Length: 83
Image (cartoon, rainbow, N blue to C red; front, side, top):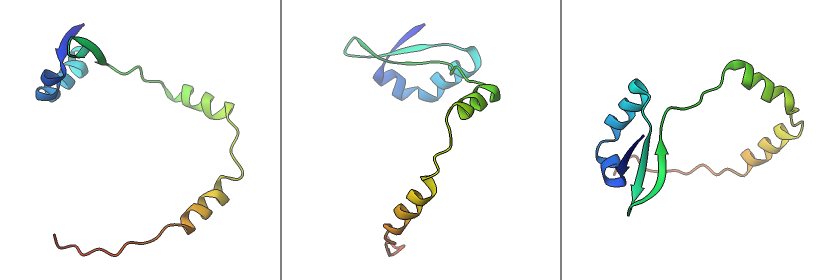
């Protein structure tokens, strides 16, 4: 695990992502000497995990009507495309 300052991480973000993707490295990002974040490979799940989550949670029957109500509150803004 490598330490990077927030400034270094910002300046070299594409390189950091390449190292994570290709070399499976993990970085700890520090600010003022204090660890504030980590950047590393994701722990992705497979389709089976997603299916199990969906099976555990029943569909919300009211969702469709709530969505329709929300859409009715939207106002279309008219803007000029010129800057």
